[in-house]
Length: 148
Ligand code: HEC
Image 1: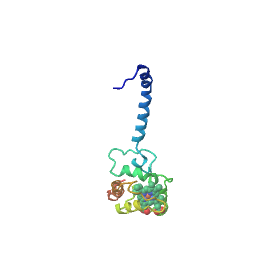
Image 2: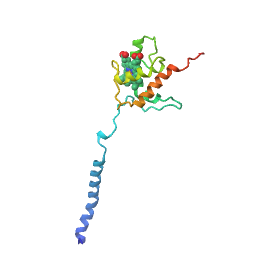
Image 3: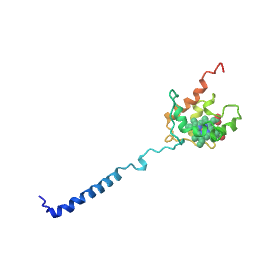
Image 4: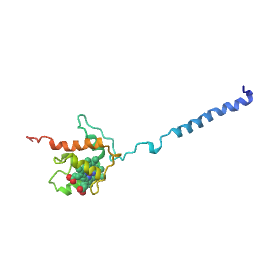
């Protein structure tokens, strides 16, 4: 049995909170996730996008990964480049195109084209790319409006 005289016990008791605090801090540092453990994503969108109710699958993924370049507006590099490439023969907006196949979209996204970067699977999963491809290709099968 350890015999601590009251005179010695007091300073030891005063130190206890400090000791506990240091131990907690060291423990927290050891348990903190290392950079390598945290999933890293390249965010192509500066805002948090929310899909409106009823939005098709792939809509949100398109907003997150593609719209920063392929959204509407002449300042968007993708839209601008496609306007220059096709000179109005097809819409500059990918979402308005009716001649895109899922294969072409997926190939372009995985390989890049001129200044469009290629997307690694760690940046855009196969599942998300499938969703985007079917979302953009869907417009192809959309029935043409028979009246204005
Ligand atoms: C950093 C800007 C940028 C991002 C992000 C981007 N693109 Fe592009 N994309 C471009 C540019 C610029 C072009 C035109 C390249 C050219 O032909 O000069 C293009 C071209 C394309 C084309 C070829 C269209 C055609 O008819 O030639 C497809 C398909 C495409 N992008 C799909 C996507 C999809 C899907 C995403 C999201 C996963 C995406 N892009 C993200 C910039 C971007």
